[in-house]
View (cartoon, rainbow, N blue to C red):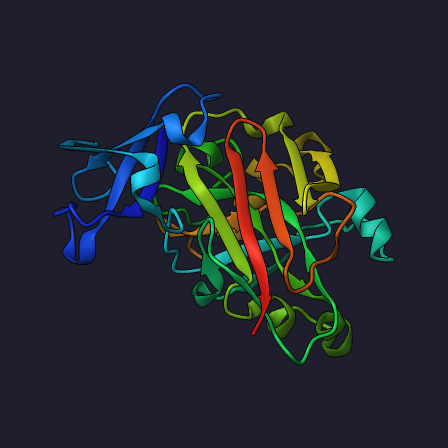
Length: 266
């Protein structure tokens, strides 16, 4: 199931017309050939439908989840660690991105004026489906609702100046995710790409991760409780590079779809 969060004037599911829905149609169908069927309440647990249904082009997609936190892992692809001038770590290097950094497909990445180098980072994102605390790797996958595409946008000059990640990766709009959550997917060997203005920049596979998904969930849940809706960013393959005002950046994850965002200076 592809779970989306969207706005439609005719949706009465929640105040303001914001609703959850299941995106219907063949995986290879064009966007304008898809429909969305509204879900009653939320997708955490048994799903029932309201009976409302719209053509996907007639709704506005939002970020598919509003997480309490985004937990990210750095240097989880050896080639990316090398391009950043570091060795592959011997344990996951994790950091947090604020929930206010999250935006959806089509929303604008806003470049801060006090940075002169902002990079794209294509990543597979995990959405947690049920609470996870001190989970062992054998049970880790049972805590996942699904997967989506993410862009771990980074002010590279600020990362270098600060020697840590908070400011560089925490700006508003620096965590695009979407376009929806795919709940039925084998994440072990998916193609992960980033393109800027149609030019391919990153091209890797999730099988190249240093630490696989069960290891990440085991490690992270041993540090902090992961709540339903929390997002895990699993790291980026080699090829990160700058984005500038006027660009359009697309993150594409095999089996999920494309997440495209325009880029503008604040």
